[in-house]
Length: 361
Image (cartoon, rainbow, N blue to C red):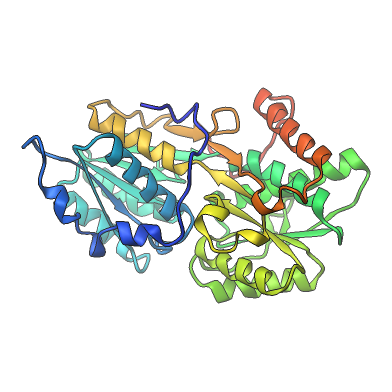
């Protein structure tokens, strides 16, 4: 079993591929019912948040982790149900409790309250959650200090900007979102300090914790609306932290004919979206490995420790920035080297990245 701590994110998700591989309506694929060994399957059941399975973001990558766990251990059976509205969270989690799933995975900070409630009502049921820590003994939290990798992305964006203005916006003002925006703003500030420049960040003020939000993780037109406003103010690089809503920004950037470019988040956008040509890089949250590791351990009979759970950092490769792909020849060699050195300095603690939204043990 490969350790989540030592791995690079090997591959993200081919666009659209998940929906084909996932069973409709959350039912297990038919062939999964024929356990080759005649024994009982270990069932890992996932509840998506409203972004849905094909958000090219955190739901997509959590499902990828379950698929990888199943690949490694043929006795693991996986299925998911997609939540259409926040009111579905408790219903869907309870449904999987009633189906006697061995491991129930909730995806996203929006599901924290519902997961806490259902987990407390079912203390013998093992839960896991991505991007939250409800502080309940039977919920294994998988969190990511994405401020660290977003700091690299902010520095990179400042170094690449021609207008001297870069932008970011979120889906909602919740910690798993604002942590990216904090890191990004600090990375720009670090660049300004190091180079004597004055690159501006539009869409987020770390000091006041106020900024631009699409108020949606799935409506692409809302994402486009927010980034259009940032671009109108002069931003030539935009980082949406808004799940599928950010696809409105990448599509518009592609249509703009090079007027601006985008930094994606969560899953390498060149492997998960159709808009690679406009992506400078991605702030990667290594959700697949964290989920895979948790499910394999639980299926193997290991007790998952709710505290501290898993916290992904640059040092353990739980977060990273993706390869530059189409931008590889456009990013100057010295800037690449500086961004790489930031990783080493942050991992070593020479540079400390802070955010009010950082996960704590």
